[in-house]
Length: 381
Image (tube, rainbow, N blue to C red; front, side, top):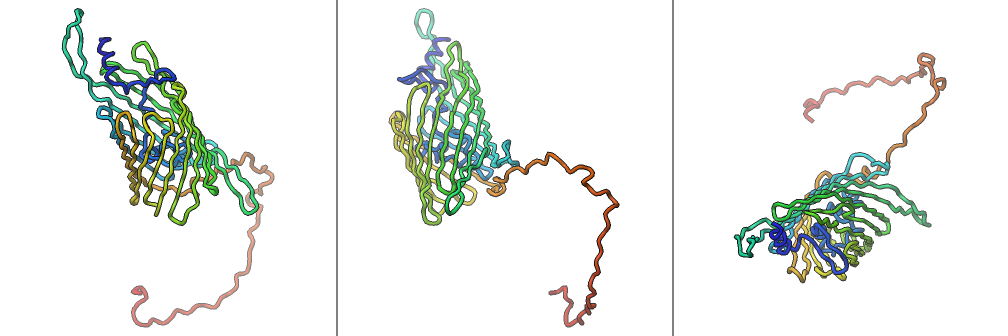
């Protein structure tokens, strides 16, 4: 059976990633970009972070979701591997643990399958004992995240007051992996993120640490999850009404592989319903140029991303999003009312019956005479 396991490992290289600069990592599905919009921006999304897929890049960005939102993504890339992604988020009707508002809850499900492989079993003398087809395996990642605003820093200028909002988010994830039908491994991990926005200036900053957690162990060897650190910024250029231009830049460091990447993206939105996107990933082995588009109609949105992949061919992503139940920003930003810790002393309150009702003379008004009926009754009008 050990020979069968080795055959599957060789036939399904997507099961683990080996870096020239580091060791082996488990569950490389966690490195596959999700969300067609983020993918088309070269994954420079840490500071953009304003839709439900941000739970994957920076959980603090969940605070930017002002609707109940659900999305699903389908990835068409390798013939053997299929990847599907589902996510949802909802604003919460309370002011958060810090009392500063914008509390949001999100969840996602990432599932991948590596197809089937043929495994040949050998006898003791080296001859073939037969060949059978087995499921190469797959990965399932379930994530639940929460975010809220933690502070608001005002800056006084000569003409106005600028605000810099601070948001924090965290998520926990359950990772389960299968191999050759008979081997299973599972572990837990966490993501943490920070997001800062200056709405009046169109500037945002983001930072996150993702896949911080345990290891996947199949038999004896345990491999860590692809721990990564992200730092990014975004700037929205002033444009005429109904036009928006946003540029984003991310730096990413993969801890165990000891690799650094720089990702950048540009998004142009016009008439609030259509968007074109362009991105590039510097020093990325399996991708470089990315591009895509998006369109919205009422509560529905569709996004497409294309990424050049010189190893497995071009990768195409489609995301479908449904938004409903918008919550006004004024309601979300309401801070918690201060708690009254003391009440007036008993002797400060007037005793019931001691107070005297005040009276006043009501002026007399002339009695109004009813008008004489003319034509049809008034209820018809």
